[in-house]
Image (cartoon, rainbow, N blue to C red; front, side, top):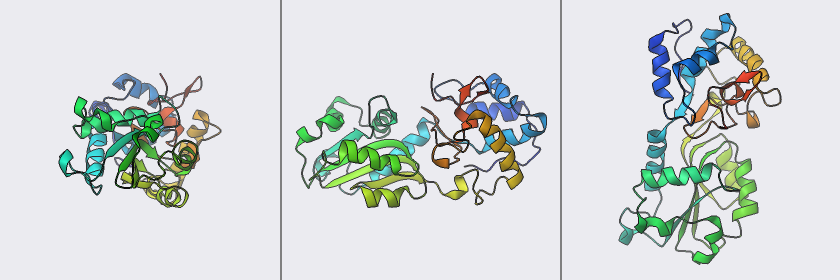
Length: 275
């Protein structure tokens, strides 16, 4: 998470405009009015704390996602922007259990980021069902794309059900993500043949309710947890109890605290996950 402003920093028009600029491009427009409405859900004495949560949101817009994917691809051995200099064949596929999930959105972002969106590049981008037909060998590489693996648990499940048999015999298989949580790399290495390539790795300092998160006091965390239970009484710390303040422009992950994304009659998140 990012370092928030100091307590009692005025919630003035300048600060509101900064948030609007910062969160521009989210799938549902974040406006000054929607920010003010979100803040109004907090009691008067807690609005300063809520504002500091917005300061601390780690927002990934298109440019930041693209930068991570460019760096990630450039780091892979055997890759070169010049097709004649690449080692073996390269194939890229969305790491998703079903259609319409985040992996497909990341494939589009990845192509744009690395200037691989031309027709000449189409053969490298395939669907999961096409992997076997490609007849890839030990000289070839498959790169799977997604936005986040928080714990690695879901990655391992999707791998076993959808990918393990399909890539048997392929020389190099990577999972490239924008962000990965603490422990994900170790679990993925133990349970799969994937090599994780994250642009950013989160640790306990990025988890709002952990002691290692130094940006908020224990009392402030307890106060925020009270609101989080209103937003989602079953998972007030987010899925997997990750407690992230992470938001991607295409969707806020459910591993983030629910005050950011849950929307129902008792709470309206600033970054709803569904239209």
